[in-house]
Amino acid sequence: MIQFLLNDRLQQETALPPDTTVLQYLRRNAGRCGTKEGCASGDCGACTVVLAEPQGDTLRYTPINACLTFVSALQGKQLITVEDLKHQGQLHSVQQAMVDNHASQCGFCTPGFVMSVFALQKNHSAVKRAAQREQVLQALSGNLCRCTGYRPIVEAALAACATPVVDQFDRAEQTTLQRLQAIAPVAGQSERYADDGSVIPTTLDALATAYQANPEAKLVAGGTDLALEVTQRHRRLTQLIAMGAIPELKTLEVTDDTIILGAAATLSDCLPLLEHEFPDFGALLERFASQQIRNQGTFGGNIANASPIGDSGPVFLALGASLRLRCGDVERILPLAQFYLGYRQTALQPGEFISHILIPRIAANPHRTLKIYKVSKRLDDDISAVCGAFNLEIIDGIVTQASLAFGGMAAIAQRAYHCEQLLLGQPWQSTTVERACLALAQDYQPISDFRASREYRMQVAKNLLRRCLIETTSTDTMMRVTQYV
Image (tube, rainbow, N blue to C red; front, side):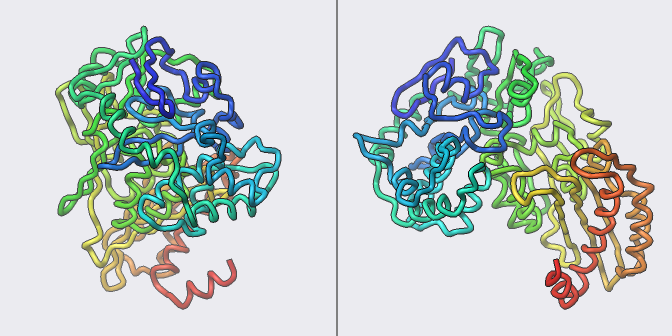
């Protein structure tokens, strides 16, 4: 059984197909058609809804794509849609700001924008500060307006967040917290929620037992990629094991030499830690899909998908990351470089899953530098044509360690071993880099597709290595280069 609050009404669902998306549930089961289907792939944001869940003694409001979220993600949470904002005949302050700033044109995308701004307003009012323009742009980066009405929408968002008023959600916060705590998943008790045996385990042991007993089941962490099987390829998914109620898989830990990420921790939750340790990684994550996707997507899922254009793969490879894998009661540590076997193929055994990602820390080494570059057609909410990560140790001008990896250049995210060998022990200068660039042809034979030609990809990969040299050797040179970019 899945229990959640639909605004202030308790819902207990026992007979939903496990591959039902939140969008399908709202429109077909709940009769709520304010949430729109625009793309069914998480690109447009028209289906944005907000999940509220306890965070200490307050609620955290999280915008997500309803089209890519399975109903199992609602367990123990409050689901808020655009229909819930109007109260006692009065528009919510976010809706009123949209009206006052003439921010709605055809109106199809408007519910999604309203919900993204609503979440931004709630989270900023909780810390008693107004959202700045850059935060508004980030919050709206996953919402598209086909009428090109962005200026008034941004102005409406700024106005709504400048002077938020106490609303019905604030007044009911403590009651909502108590109700959510009463239906929270109980540790040690797995919840079966569909007739096919789909289950929501609440402990790592329970997950290991369930998956070992049924290795053909599909694991669901964020589900932002798996849901495309339903929404884009129109396939039916049965026997799902949802990982979202397992605290051990959401932990973030830092030791003296290692960062440990739970495989089901969302990208949004990981961002502050990774941004602090690796500023370039933080910058990449801010361009990873959209905020709605980052609020659901996980590194465990991104790695396990084994997509050659997944942005985290080349970064973790360059950092020398390893994976903690578990099958039943047996755990093993596997370097990520040994995990990818081929296109969408991994070293996972039947019934085995990723529990944690282990990343060596480099912040304490003053000779280390990490540069990450993503090249895509759009700045936000787009997939890479090429993603390059460069982890270098340079002492007295000599490259003493080099770990380079690219995505979009092969059937898997892959290290550039030949290129690395021509850098090691050599001066970090233009002649060395030019020789290393030639070696990239030995490491990769990229293909042409609708994102980029193979020639373009190879040239971009070379240019990114050259850019890394410029950025790490001459501030004056970099300033001159950026003036003409």
